[in-house]
Amino acid sequence: MSVRATFAPDRATYIQSHVTLAVLAMPLAMIVLWLTGTPHVWTGAIGGLAAVALRGWYLMSEELGHVWTLTDEALDGPAMRHVPLSDLAKVRRIGSAVQLVTRGGDKHLVKFQADPAATVARIEAARAAAT
Image (cartoon, rainbow, N blue to C red; front, side, top):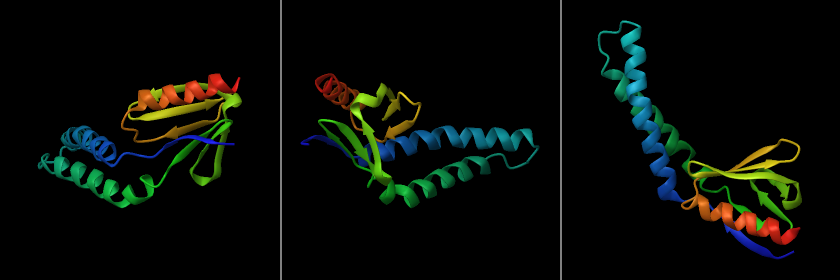
C-alpha cells in the first residue's frame, strides 16, 4: 500500500478561517446585545473578537496536527479514522474543508486545505484508479 498524498492543514488558511468567523461573530454579538436592551452594544464586537481569537489560539496546535494520508486503497486520518476509497459516496468542498461522505452516511472533514479543489481532485483520481 503506497502513499499517494498527504493532506495537512494550512496555517494561513486556519488563520483566515478564524478571521472570517470573527467578522461574522462581532456584528452578531452586537445584534444580540441590542435586542436584549444592553446600553453598551459595542462590547459585543469586542466579545465576539475575543471569543474567536481565544478559541483559534487554543485549538491551533491540535487542528494543525490533523493530517490525512491518501493511499491506493483508503484515506487515513486523525483519531484512527479509516475511510476506504471504495466506501466513498461523495467528496465535496465545503469552504476550506473537504467533506468525505461514506455509503453508510458517515461524514469526515479534511480541514483547512489551502486548495480544497485540488484535494478533491486528488481524492477523486485515487478513487477512480481504485475501481
